[in-house]
Structures are given as structure tokens and as C-alpha cells.
Image (cartoon, helix red, strand yellow):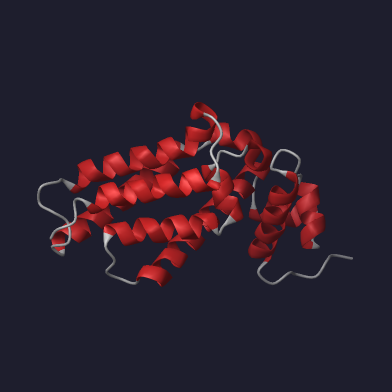
Length: 193
């Protein structure tokens, strides 16, 4: 007899997968384990996702959406650049999965850390450019800096933070928070008076 349909099946799968990634790590997690934790058949997982990696990609996209929503809720519609970075640091550190992504935590994200999709970074960079262009158009970003140039500096620093623990040595929450705050301070220096 087939199992009954699960409402919000995709979110149920992602919730189960996130719990497993955080408790066991990505490498130890299996699609069968996700299905068991979600209370559905393994085939139902494959109806939503083509692979285990696709599940983690979806988790990271969902995590970024959570961060964006938390930042918007805190700073509103017309924040200053420094406020955005401070709120981002708080939201990031409150989200265990996204903190693991920034701390390059192989215990959580495993080999997935080595296989990050470049298009995800490019799309995020384009979003930063668009945000800074809106700030410039609203008169909130100094004309002394091109939005594309500042976005490139900020995006490069963010990408660097994603690999800092692996390349520069252990990175803890306090150092991550301080680095994000420093980025915010640097970016804030380009705000219009």
C-alpha cells in the first residue's frame, strides 16, 4: 500500500536533512536516513531532489533565504550599509547551518565544501551590485565609489571568509563576527554623508 502524501514534502525533507547534517555531518548522512527521519519513502525524496548534493544545495539556499529574511526584519527597508553587516553577523551566528558554511566546517558540510557552485557566488555578487546601485540611486552611497567596485571588494571578502578556516587556520564564531563587523565598517565608509 502506498504511503499517504506528505503536506509540504519538500520542506519536510529539508527539515529532516538539516537535522541530520547538523547531527551527523553531510558525508555520514544518507538519502535513506533522510527518508526515515522525514517519515517518507526513499523514492519520495528522489521525487524532490535528484541527489544528496542537491539536498545540501537546497539547504544552503534555504539558509541564505533565512539570513536575508532575518536581516530585513531587523533593519527594515532603508538600512545603512554598516547596519546590514551587523545584522548579518547576528543572523549568521544564530543559524547553525550557515555558521558551519562560513566556518568551513567539514564535520558538518564534509566534502561539499570543496564542490561549491561558482554560479551561486556569481548570483550573490550580482545581488550585491544591484543593492549598492539602489543605495547610490537613493543618494545613500557616495559617488566616490562605483557600486561594481565596492561589490567586488565585498564579494571577494565574503568568498575569502568562506575559505578562511581551511586556508588560514581555525576560525571561531568570535573571529567570524569580528571579520563581518570589520567588512561592515569598511563598507560604511562609502556611505553618503
